[in-house]
Length: 395
Image (cartoon, rainbow, N blue to C red; front, side, top):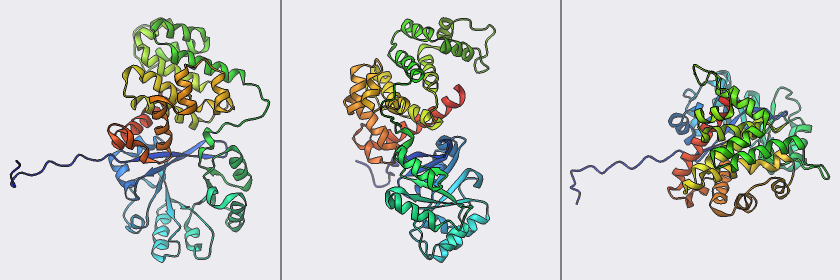
């Protein structure tokens, strides 16, 4: 029995629950990531405990700050040139908030008014704002047009559309004059009835399927050798400045022996996925984050590679511009991979469902895993760091 003089052991530290959502421009270029956190004050916790580089890499962080943090009048938790400060407009008639936002703008911060709906009383905030975020799901297509019309007297104001979930949404918002976009449309296939499966895309994804299904060293080597372009890139990678060696690597077999089959499989996956033409960089990163997260959430080490494959191919419908069922029919994937992707079945399907929910900020999705939300939070954070580093060092 513990004596009253003994101190109770400290409670284990809870993981910061954070996800990120890309913000894209009209050409699908990456403008930065909005950080989705549980609780307004947790933004600062995420930055201090995890670090900006881990969360957003070299890209800008779009930070949602609550009223209390805005009125604190302290310095921003990061340099102002690395951040877009998102200010809630629900308290838009608050003079103290007006003053806090003006001070932020005077210090050089980019201020975006979040959840914007034009009404009298918001002029002081608009005077200081760099941009406004307008939610398509709240206003609808015509309501969105009305919001744009109300802001036409401010030509320098950046318009950011949120809840842009389909390609039709994206086209509508772009035509209205929005220049930044958030939503699920980045992974939404642009389906054109009657269009044939693009040969170049299918070739790259066929190589990716071969690489993922190659369990033995020799099978993986054959899969890479069959793709002349991939073989050339592997030799160039093995002979790059990343690996200092006295002699040049001269064959795929030698490169694989020196680098290891598992790292080569990961590298080849990235290169094959990047070989699909006309796809946004953000989609590649999304696929890698899902793949690594699914792998880390696997409770069976013997199926970790299968889980990685499921996450990687979760964007196949976007890559081929086909409904998911048709896209899966176009490639030789194992039945359990297809079941996980199409119906969320099995352990891999469960991991993928969790990864998809987490990237939207639905942190309750981690409660059914052993280790709970803390485990999923670590897996997501590690997956983001791995994906960003892989893209930076490989492409």
